[in-house]
Length: 208
Ligand SMILES: [Fe+2]
Ligand SMILES: [Fe+2]
Image 1 (cartoon, protein in one colour):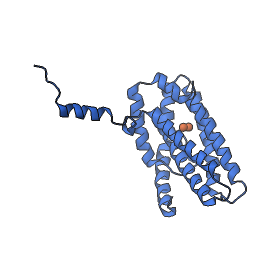
Image 2 (tube, helix red, strand yellow):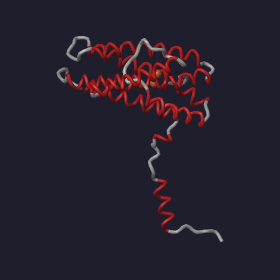
Image 3 (spheres, protein in one colour):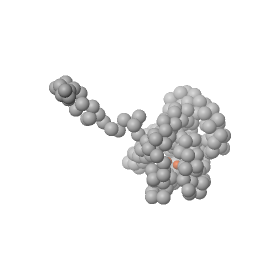
Image 4 (cartoon, protein in one colour):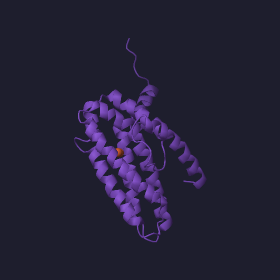
């Protein structure tokens, strides 16, 4: 005889079906990377909403931007780009251009890290970073870019495995820019992990 659902089992099923689907454990690599892009864009909007005299807040938002982008760049260079280079027909040229833009960005972030929000060039530097990141993100997300090409050519399993690797890489990633460090494996895996530990020690001292 087929078993009929009791009231309590149907309630359990109903509860299960209303669980939020945004659980990060279920996100694939593309959703994770796009969520990082959205976080950084929110910080840019916050920065632009601050007045000239809000020096402390401008410095705090700039520090968050430096941290988010340093971690994001390291995770892409350790997980996303090596896989894209192998899996995509245009992988080599897409990744070469992306790494060149990361390098330029790291140099700008290193300058920002040392700048004072009271200095003349601080806002210009921030504007340059905002423009450069928005251009780079557009290239990654647009049709023909790394993310949409991976969506087309990688399997769901591969995208989920890359998400797991990204979450692990994020925990050890550097939180500050290191423009002199290697951008590609295996160098970035070794130096990135050491830099990550050193950055976290500095973050603890400076309470970042
Ligand atoms: Fe990138
Ligand atoms: Fe990105």
